[in-house]
Image (tube, rainbow, N blue to C red; front, top):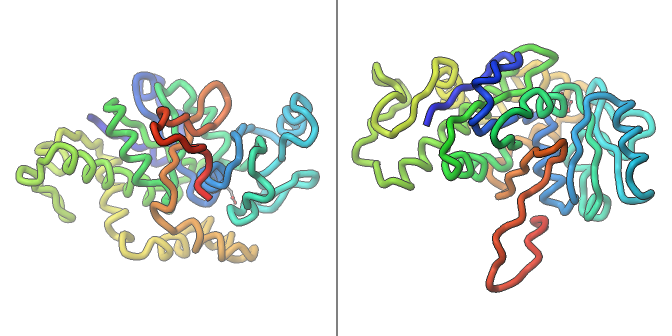
Length: 278
Ligand code: MLT
């Protein structure tokens, strides 16, 4: 498996999307909101690129079935039901509702990479589950951090690095290759290129090393980042704390035909609803 990461959010060549698992990351805050809202029972999320599209799309659905969420300059958009703070997406509001989401970078990113074989949403909240799905799929991976208005974003790169780390660990556990893995924080000359069946491009190696710098304190990366600082200045400091949690959800939202949903689990012999995580 080869993993590339598009550290600057420019549209990758389509050869790097088709036949690949594509992982969209916008930890502050779009993909965190998506994972969180679906885990609180939202039916589906429709990511849109403009505010007008959001209002127009809503008219296609029965009244009361659909909420508008998102931000402009990080604040709730006039006429929208919800902003882009995960903590607003509580079960009492979102359960069984469709959410049309419009954000500055994150929701556009899904449309940019829609040619991917499978396009998923990842954040720290569901990072292990996303990594495991990448491994299960066993296609090459393109990680697509949404960035910050076309620029590199520290927090998304760190999350991409963590995904790479988790994929490595998952492959090692899954194939019992612990004995042949010599991967270390300070890379060997063939860092990531032998031993575990993974090929990391230069950007992937860089993102992984960056993650290792912040591994013990993800919140520090948020506080150092441009967007993290903006959010704190606007009074959304609690969102940083929320979005820095790892593995609180096992859901892997998939973007397909313009809609983000959690794929139905295979039927369980014990029954159960299988929707939402509480
Ligand atoms: C985005 O899509 O750019 C973000 O989610 C912005 C934010 O939440 O402030």
